[in-house]
Length: 446
Image (cartoon, rainbow, N blue to C red; front, side, top):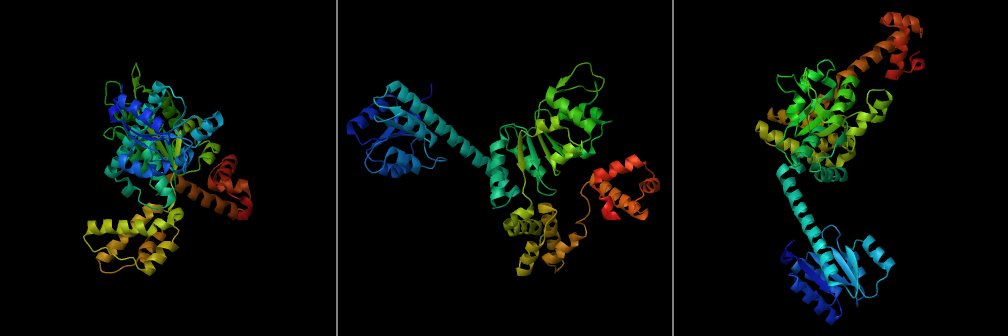
């Protein structure tokens, strides 16, 4: 049984005899108690006494128990148990809906009242421990530095990470290139129950159906595969929509069965890891184009985190730029460049298609220029603008090349598809399929 001597209760009742009766019951049960006659004095007493639970009458002069309930901060205050000789079911239901822990009618049954108070106090203590632990982990992990920012989206994202980190739940992270998806995945792992466990990051675009089993499952009697080495930790599947369909089927089987068959093995080997995945693509479109298995997606998206673009958090631009400039100034051993009005205007005018990753690169170039005795933020941004239209992945680069080549062939042959297909060295049916897949508008080309 829990030792209730550690628990403190604040009793509020305008009836002196009732206050004395409650205090005597609580002291016999081993509680520390303070009793007051007015709810208006409760806030000051709570600050001094720091109760684990508040037991308050409902009808009192001045401030009622319901008024007190409405005034409490539900996230930090001790739970409130209401007690009344004038209670009715609608009032009790309303009070609990508004945040009261419980409602007890007078005359009360002592054992039941003590049980309710103990459970409320235990819950409050547990919440305090969790809050302190999260604060300590937040400080130790440097989550505020990894995901720097003051905008509402980033503040909520940091809180979501803290809330999800120790649950072990499967998480899918959505966000444009450069928004920090792997940073978030690593934060979820580092703040989890076992940060020392393995963290295996797989770039799904680089996986091959032909070599997947040997590399990931291993060989019977040979070295362990990478998935077995990651067992007990976190498996991070980056660019999940770029994963070959054949590999998606193999991954799904592993996630469902929680076991792998090393090549040439007779028996399966159990594996267990938390799965975090990430994508910069539209999931619905990927499923429509048969590049993403729906059943695998349902395994991966138990919880989803969407990372904001830098365009959506422009209020963080100066804060992030200042942090990156200071970081690179330390690395290159130079004075931190100031951000003047022209620099600020350049930062705010740019669209930041590469998001935080692009900003980091711009700040590094600015510091390197300062090291040589010159440079501006405008020049640092311009140095990267010639790369704005370069695709981020091989798949995107191939698609862009095919789109341009097919468009030129259709234009050159004035829309004659047979001639265009022959010039491209592909069949007419293949050409039609590519036009649909690449989203080409034939009429617009002519």
